[in-house]
Length: 263
Image (tube, rainbow, N blue to C red; front, side, top):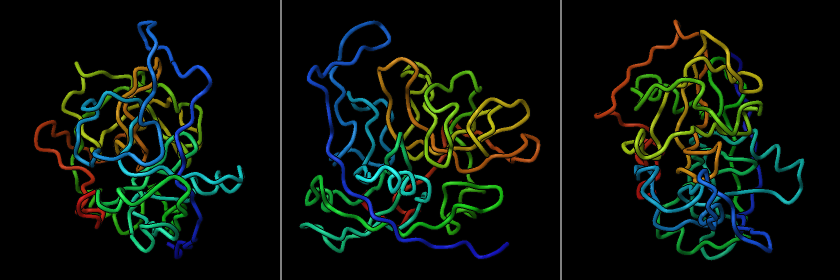
């Protein structure tokens, strides 16, 4: 395989935004205020349950965007799980975090809690992107691939549970899984899951006989068609992907694996 190109990208810590009427409508037709949908999220860590918080699409750490739409597309397309993300401005300047994933046009980066406490919306972050273009994987730094290939998955789910994310480019998006606490109370941020009959090599969509392994990058959501977000990292024919389901002993993407203790 040819050497994958490294690119330095600029992201800006976003601030949450709401309309003049802040409410969304949940699956039962009731209004709610979508908290923790972006920006700097404190107190949520890798390993926490995807239904531990009363929030909407909550992700640990910070979310990055770019004010130029084309640059933002590049940021979300090229950033990969495990890439270094160095704070370049503000009180946390010089601190290094790691990319966890992406969601709807933004990149999720985890940092230790003491670093997050010094960060604010508007801080600039340099993401050292590396990994897109590898054969058989996507959205993952090559340094993490050997460890991920040998890990179990928390669960194996059918394609009909995929909601938001189908029809989108998987290099820029995640797949929301339409599950609730009754089915997935044991799922945790950073877990790996396998989604059967899904092909994400191009736009994500249903394809029998193909499977996708993904990492859970954000928590659940009351919004219909949404749920815990799974960012694809591997895809191929089901018969060629070695998947071992371990609902109890599974260990997915941890702060230690990312080289970011305390995240």
